[in-house]
Image (tube, rainbow, N blue to C red; front, side):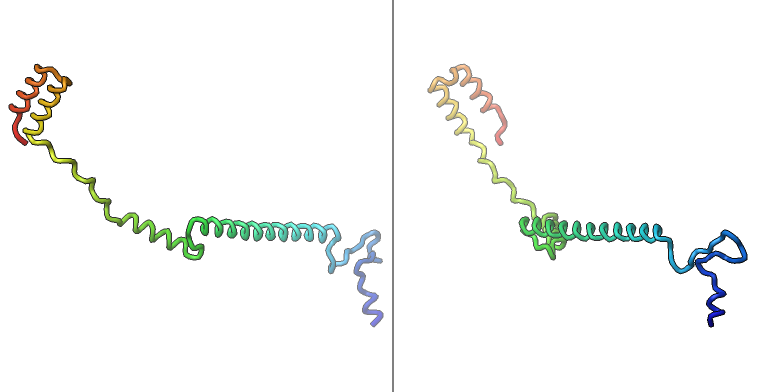
Length: 138
């Protein structure tokens, strides 16, 4: 058995070839192992950062939805229903009708009142009465 082990020249110089050494094939160089460890540490730090960012974003979104009156678990459905109701809502009632137009007698009485108070002259009153009387009835 000793002869079998002594024939394997791993990590030592080869007696047949001077000044040549063969590296041990089972273990990587220490500098390569350190680079891999640093790379893995960087990956872990980035992963933890992403997880923390996701948790903080979810917590903030939850708080905003609660303040806005939405249930965070069903917010998308609530918004869809609200939009559907707004799009299919009945139009608001029409504006109330305006006051009916004054009759011819009321308009003539108003002209007489304006002339009596001196707001319009007699000539303006006469012209306005003629215009009212000649206009077609509505």
